[in-house]
Image (tube, rainbow, N blue to C red):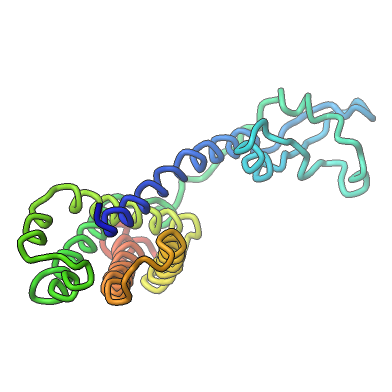
Length: 246
């Protein structure tokens, strides 16, 4: 199997493997977030407590969530209590909170994500074409023209590349929505930061087996692709699709 296939497969598989723990942690976080009303074991009076939802989410990845209080209406005066109310608080339902409508800028816009992934994929097709870096890529991979043509007609490399572009675009969009900074600069900044993490993971996984010429070719494409994805995800939803007031 060609090294490039393994690299793309590694990226896609890593994203899919990390997706399930992330979804599970998010579910646990949502379960234990929010204020709850319980009777204090010391005073027998109602108090309002909050769980450390983030700690519960992280500890749930290795077993049963480890619960502790992050806040209590009797704190900070009685912050040294033994937190005996945790079992009752776990059984108690969170206090309903009336939330305002989520601003458009904090939502993931799927159409710009698809456009960004498609643009990155098209850039990859042009980048690896015979008019740009295909000859250098063939030399780095030690492939003949015939085998390269056969490889280009296969579906698997294109599907893996499209999946990697789509996962990267959604990851950038999720970070942009989470941080609440939907601008051209922030989109590019987040995309490049994520690009550094992905490249570092690939370099660690492949060690020194990648030819320097291939590293420069694929590194240049992925860098420009990250810039393109960050620009589209960061700027297009705000100026074209969402049209917020910022």
